[in-house]
Length: 192
Figure (cartoon, rainbow, N blue to C red):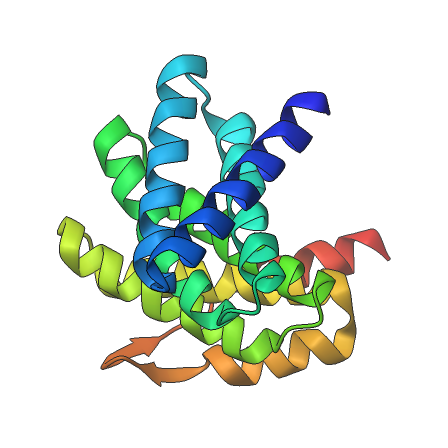
């Protein structure tokens, strides 16, 4: 728990300083997220749940820091997901789960700071597409992972948020048809 809070606060401080220094949100998010994740993953060797937990913490810090300085949360969401893809490529771990965890964290953190969840989710999907193209991954798979993660995160906020985000991430985004995979629907049915 202490380590989680430490990562969130470290990233929040880093993003605040970077945005204040340059005024550029997307690049600040890319650099802060990828740098923090590469260093953390190399030092801890995190995989599986530890990896997705670290991704979530880093992106939460990114959104909280961006909101703190009154900058564009959507730009931070986009840059944050690009940063996740860059770091997973550099460290050599599979990106899809990390993309989904990142988009989920972006939406939940946007809700925490009173941001526009639909815009944050759509920006996370845009970031997944841009990052996938840059890394030579399939943009459709990355977009699907981001959209599914965003919807899952929004559903944890409220049913209304889930529907808002579903509408925002469905269809064609940045020239890519986004197909939402919905494992969370069957999970909800199992709980009943």
